[in-house]
Amino acid sequence: MKNVTGYDVARGLAGSWGTLAALTEVTFKVLPWPEDTVTLVYTGLTDELATELMQAALGTPYEVSGTMHLSASLARRLRHDGLGALGTSLTALRLENFTHALAYRKEALREHLKVAGFVKAVELDAHGSAAFWNEMRRLAVLPAGPTHLWRISTRPGNAPKLVAAVRRHMEAEALYDWSGGLVWLEVPATADAGAADIRRAVATHGGHATLIRADAAVRAAVDVFHPLSPAVERLSRGLKSAFDPYGILNPGRMYAQF
Image (cartoon, rainbow, N blue to C red; front, side, top):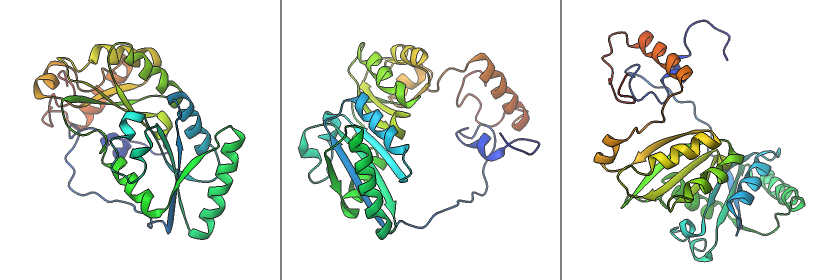
């Protein structure tokens, strides 16, 4: 929603892959680097419990700035000293603030989650937190190799069900971000990257899936971007027509018919 006429250009161009305009200048709004950082890491949680924990943490007033859940097998790929050797799933909650405020927020968050039944957590200081979140930022636990990688957006509470539905048809490793609202899904390399089964699970539980990494032959054989519903396709065509009436900007980059 916005209170001006015309198009919201920034939102429209974000994620359009150069199909609507060519950017000549970009301005970023930045924030100061936090004075201190701490990460609480809960171990051994199932996907369902982990998403409950992350949602509960983000629902508090203690300004949790990042949440992530890794399965045990993905956690073992970590280079972080200590965490990779635990041999269990990891659910991380990050807090960033001034040092004097961080101590209070950390303990208050611990107590809040303890009431919900989440008791034991490993604590990472600023140095350990930086190392861990740097690996997460780079998706270092999902390295390029003989696998395919999907990016799935869905409702956080539906994410474990969606992943479980995919796992009924193929092996899959899931990295949960945004409390489960964003799932990075690693699947075995196949001719269609598991597209049919993954998109059927997404259709059942809600969301959309984008194929991020696969061989060129696979990317040419399946739709990389999630199929559009008729209503969204109508809006997308209207945007494309308004921004690129002659169809010269990356035609077919996202959808063959655009």
